[in-house]
Structure formats: C-alpha cells, structure tokens
Length: 192
Ligand code: SF4
Image (cartoon, rainbow, N blue to C red; front, side):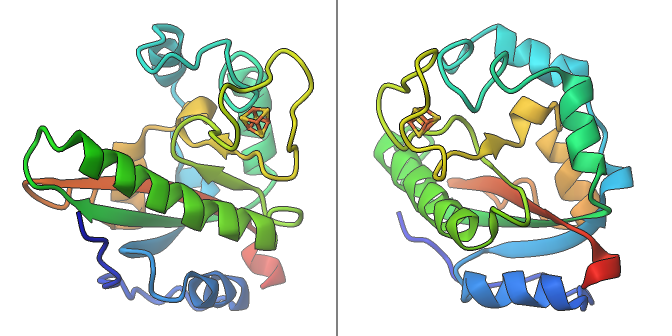
C-alpha cells in the first residue's frame, strides 16, 4: 500500500482559512474541495446504518451514535458554520482482499486527520472517517480518556460520503484496488 500525495483538485478554494488548511496538509491529502454546508444532505438512513452496528462501534464509542447526540443536534452544530473543507486520502491495495493495506490506509488517514484536529479543532470542528481509535477499547460510557484527541465521524453526523464527494467535486472512488477516506473541517468563509 502506498499513499499518494498528489493533489488533483485545485478548484479556487481561495479563502484564507481554506488556504491555511491546505498548507497544513502539506500535500499529504489526495484531493480536497470546499463546499457550503447548506449543500450537505443529512440522512437518517446513514444513522440507521450505524444502528445496524456492522462496524461494532454503535453504542461503544464517544464519537459514534448514540453518544454523539441526535441528527438534528449534529445538523445544527454543522450548519453553525457556512463552509466545509473536505479532504481525502487514498491508499493503493494489492487486491480487494488486501485488509492490511486497508488498515494501513485508514491509519494514515486517521493520523493526518488527528494532526489537523490537534492544530485547528478547537476553533474549526473536524469530522473524520469512522470511530475514534485513539484508545482501544473506547472508555465509553466511562469518561473519554483523551477528549482533546477525539473528533466525530462524518457518517455519525448522518452525512452520505458519496454525496459529499459529489458536492466537493472530488472522487468517492479512485479506481480498482484503492481505498479512499474522507474528513472535513468546518469554518466560516466570511471570516476567512
Ligand atoms: S479518546 Fe479514547 S475514550 Fe475518547 S472517544 Fe477516543 S477511543 Fe473513546
């Protein structure tokens, strides 16, 4: 598995804050795009998919449903910002059974998102891919061990990543034997 550092999407995301995020990524993201949060579709079906617990984190982690609050509460928090800087990382796999490659790609994405969260999260909420894995297992329902490290997932907020990618004009799927992960950072363009 090799992570690409190529950034393909250079649409004019020229607000000062978006440029700041892009600079912090240091070409370690695959693609990025800026969207208005009003373009985000919040879907109860995505949260229902969480409830099916195929990932095993439902009711097991502070950054997943139901601990994150209701869809309406999350929507309100996200819509308090007018824009989202969406970025992806892409990992190459040997084949579709390359679970080690998938795991390595996820770890790469989580490291990068964690770094961005550490840098900007206090001012600009960061949403990542999947449950928080800062410690295993999560302390939930006991108090979070590292609240400064924890950030919510895009899916936990009921956001369909396929639609998010379309809105941001970046690829949801980067081709055969690849895996792509999404994160987003909320900000206000009027301030940047
Ligand atoms: S930092 Fe640890 S306790 Fe807190 S949400 Fe993440 S995994 Fe759970």
